[in-house]
Length: 440
Picture 1 (cartoon, rainbow, N blue to C red):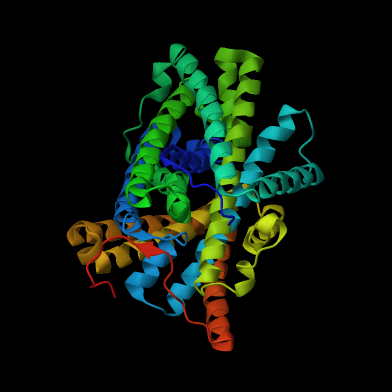
Picture 2: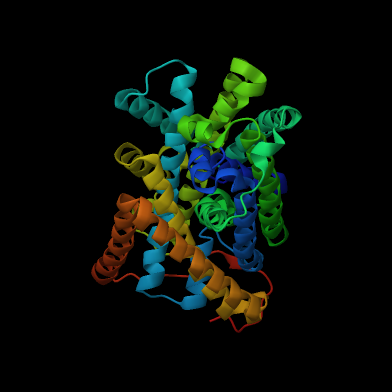
């Protein structure tokens, strides 16, 4: 990206929080209520624990290996240059592309009802195109502009959610939030926790901006853990306020703008407007941060030979072409898929990448630090999460199941062909802190 001033700890936290809160509280809250019912707060807690499991490895690796390629740099150093590593590099970039599509869908779901427009394919498509175009333009101004914008957007949406939480707790119906202790309730809670694992994935964006962060060795790990802690508290509090004021069937019926409907019992139409505005801020910040992360990933991977060279070329306002390619391909996904399918595909993609990051951490633990026994246990846990996601897709989202298989197969074929035709080899990028010489 451009040679702009670096961002500080709280701007990095804002980028992560902005992405995470936009991912689930506003985009797929109704889906979570359908699966977990009144156990939704407990599902968010379990999802947060899963995120901390991954963050443990990210923090150890990110404090030593400073690269905007983030997890792919870790995998390259841990597993070496091979087809799988190259395919994961493409997969990481695609995960940001598809995430932007998810957030654009979420924005449209709140925006059109708020301005009293019919939710037609044309209206939705035009809104999604305009939204992605605006934040692509903002990202062309560089990391400092993105960080500042993200900081203020996050402050606004946290204030709005704070109002929702405080007033919602004052009118809370305790009977609505009693957890379901049956076997079916426990099963739904675990499944929802696996699905809502998606809602914490934004913390990884910190590593994709590590070269742009002041004192990354110290601030990258801190930013990840701080952002997960903030988001976990917000998720649990918001879910308690929502199900404590609106029945689960009503939340499910509201679907795309469930939280706005949940504000009506204690704030009336003013609450609907307030939360809809908060949703627009939230999803906007998620798009802003994810475009930033996706462009950084594309640029870094191209620079290190892991994506074609045109991703590295500078164009308008000296921004890399990867920014504009990321934005354009996001539009293809947002116009072609529905919200539930997009969410399911993203969850699978990120979980696969996380598993390989943990395997790499296991191999590099002697150099970057960390308990191999704990890492091994964490790998088993994430393997179970992936199995749960695939099971959910097979049972409820066949389109997403086949889409996930197609994406995984497609990137392996693309990487194999590109590696053979271009004779490409992956290069290590970024920089490292003080490390013993035993890293492969």
